[in-house]
Length: 252
Image 1 (tube, rainbow, N blue to C red):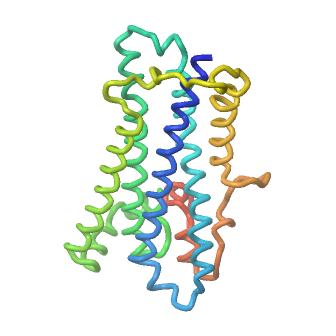
Image 2: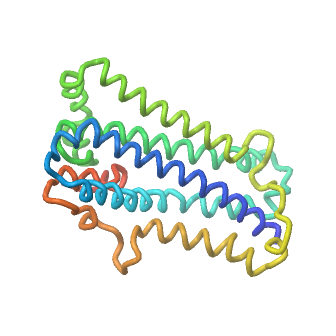
Image 3: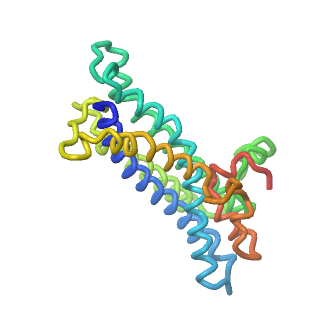
């Protein structure tokens, strides 16, 4: 019961964090639109552009779903009485810092890949992929440098660094890792804390359902795919709909 109580509270905190990073990923898409895409979509109605952003959230949720699978198992592990009450220094370190390290590194990947993707997109009109990296490396930096100028290029890089730094500090604050072990959250009081079925639903079934649904990206029997990004005849707008992480292992 205590383990389910702890995990339900920790998942509630993580949902707030995931909501904030989803907003950050949408903000990256907005920056891409304002800096690059808007010059290519004259005449496109606002509803189509709005649909692109809405479908883009679905692709971002798919990415977050997969990134949260390790979080799911880690949270259940640290919420158990055995680990919550451990005196082992290694396990105590993992309790206090492992989740923050994982979330900080994953958000670093999200922001850095988003930055590189934006620069590549401006030169090539589609998302940056692993195959593009194999073919040309980071040579597009030179094109961006000459096309945008030093000041603007560094301005975009600085923006993405600020986003990531703010994200890391927010994660640290939200999870309260300094001075409080993750699993040693104050237990809930009231009817929910005494209802085993409710705790199972909130601490186990609901998080599992939310992560699984997000990773699928859709209610339909088929997993979300590139067809869900086809919102117009302008391929650059369709490419903007995709998440840069989701698209990284694809070939366009």
